[in-house]
Image (cartoon, rainbow, N blue to C red; front, side):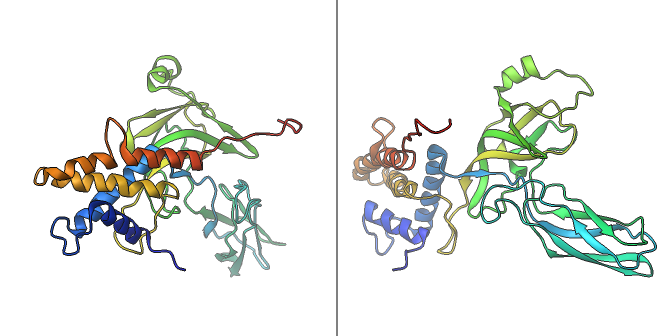
Length: 322
């Protein structure tokens, strides 16, 4: 049996809660969709159920011949091994990229990929040839979130989220980790006040691997700061709490996972009924049943259950390594 689309399912549940309005005499469909999307954002923010790591590695997208060199007769293109494997499927150890090049008149004229690979941050490209010298080829990697030399502040809206379906924006961050060769470390997070008072030493040329971070600003317009100022690019794994894209039709992807989706109709129903309570006062008690600042209502019941189901306790082995 095929499951209904998320938007269809939300609207179906919402109409059951507010009372079936076949001719849309009270609530029009645009309002129902709007209230559903507001409720989805509320669930994502409260439940912190859309978490994504910023991309710290990617595939190689293109090769560019920067310098053609001279004297090439039988060139073979060699790409370095993956330098930042993610440890995640489908290529936990990375995937070796492969490419070819062509020489015309002793110079490297073109270079292209046969396999883009995976797990790259700063790949190098070399050319083996018995006689040729001087060619320079650079590799362009897919969207990767990295530090920039001397840059202290990084905006949430600049974090590349295009690879995550259904995600609209970053709401807040939990941690920032950096990768350098085979070493990964996490920044110590402090408040902005402590960062400015005790950590941020306004020297003009203190460049080093970052070891402290703080969030500055709130919500989707927020940012975070790093110190010391990065002395080179480091790929960053930022633990992001995100908001979902609005559902506009039955093909829009839903980033909110179950069981959190079950809470959405209750908050949407509360908003729907509340919007008409001034005209129809009899709707106010039902609106408070679905959500209430004092009691929480059925919305908070669904949220508590989602947390219990999705965030259970755990036990580790008393006999294994810790």
